[in-house]
Length: 221
Image 1 (cartoon, rainbow, N blue to C red):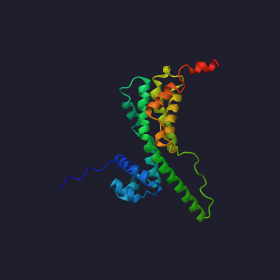
Image 2: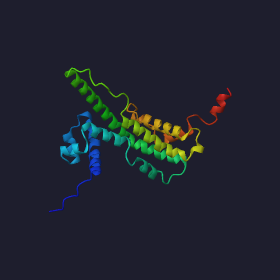
Image 3: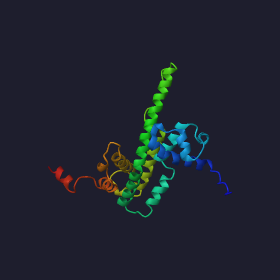
Image 4: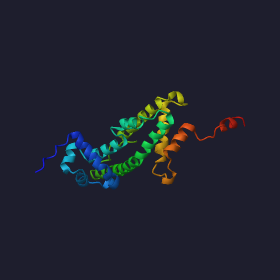
């Protein structure tokens, strides 16, 4: 009889469940069941709730990890290890962000459906109980979304900080502009053929879209 595999640590178990749930969330959205989660993770349903207090906590953890992976800073630093000039760093950074963006958008769209479904169910339960509804509904994005965007801006700011003397804006502003270009080009409403490439984002961000000399010509008119 082969030896039994060593039991997973709590952190490893949490990671395994999150990694198993991410593609299921994209595929099934708010129809995702704990049975499907358990089958994909190779655990009993009860094991899930020894790691996460409930299904909402699990799905929020998946979304938070997708937006802000724990190794995001180390992964970016490794990708930039051999890059020294600003255009190369921006191009590599933009390419990494674009490669992850489809998964991020898919997870967040699935989570939006889940949140809306959960909200509707809570209101229905409140009506049946004769209440006025949830007293303090959250407005705006969940806290983990705010945290993830702030962490992304901090990582991007670090990319520009070493080249602050080459910029006409602060590294923080450059980070915001890069994030806006990348995320805007991957908006769900943008057709695939209209999406910006890493090269286009780099050229527009660092060079602008006005032809050299045209600014001076326009001021002289």
